[in-house]
Image (cartoon, rainbow, N blue to C red; front, top):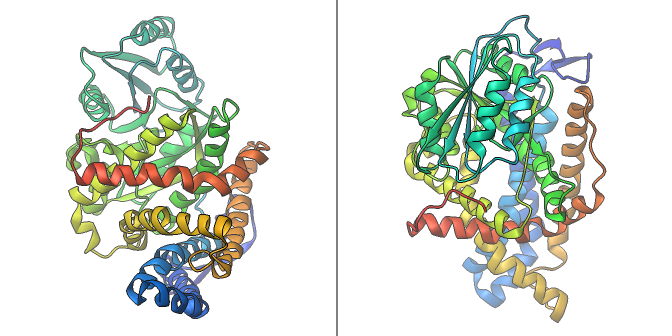
Length: 456
């Protein structure tokens, strides 16, 4: 594999840099990640020995691996990818292929108007067909859509189609019904409460048409719109900004974003058809994305195509949402088990996802009780001095992620809102709130409980 000198693809730098092939980047990232694990094991030997004296060696290894070693490997792998990543820059086009935007809506009368307005404000150089699928709403969603459709009939290259379903059948059914009516070969999905930033539609589609020929889908960058409304929403602003967006970016570096989320993503219609459409699951977007991977398609990520969505504002809503996301992950493994045995560049992320139930179980049953024992009873065998070695890495990772995201924001005229309280809560309480919901999702799918798509 040759290493060539190229102009930087970074959106914030015009300096020459060494182009490193993706497979070499993967190798370097893995070397750095496993080197960190090796160092962690060496440092943790006294900790393991102390735990083994109390709980036995197998249980000690079970605890330390879940608390420190696997998370340490994942974080080191992530930060290595960030340091090596250089994004391709796709120039804006004078014309682009026509697109069909599918908006599945259920009781969204309060938000659907702003969502449609954000689409009409896009300066997309091509025809845009907007199909709103009213999935059995009991409010005035359909009336709002009809009014907007009547008001915009004369808008050039824009058309709204309302598809009313008499009964609520879930998001996958609504999207599949909308797909049947789609006139164009490029499909975009957008949630009914999601607002597009300027040029986002154009940049999303450019990433699809200018990307490698085997690209089936491109995930947009979804951020929080209602972060000023509640403290919980302020916390999630950092989750979307630092966590979700950065992970998708590094996954795309290795040519395999694992979720082209329904909130804002673009697809080739032919690839959706080949994959069998959106499956009847609670995690329809992740299961469909993994179907693309099974078919040897590439799924990318557009870090410069921004959409702002409304996130849950109560813990009950957040719990239901994250439980559904976790259940969707298990559905993806059940529908596509071969993804584990067929090597690909993104396999490290797939394997890490496989450990999620174990990691959440250890966090809930070992780390949290150990933390309480240390704070209230001064018992430091489980959570003590050794766990402090995780803090420098976590701080370094968050600093790297933050400055990478800030640069992308600034290069597109966005600024990061000062949200210090949200940042503190994100660091201190996020995992405490999310792990119970995720573990409930795993159990729900293992035991085949009745499926629920909503968050309200």
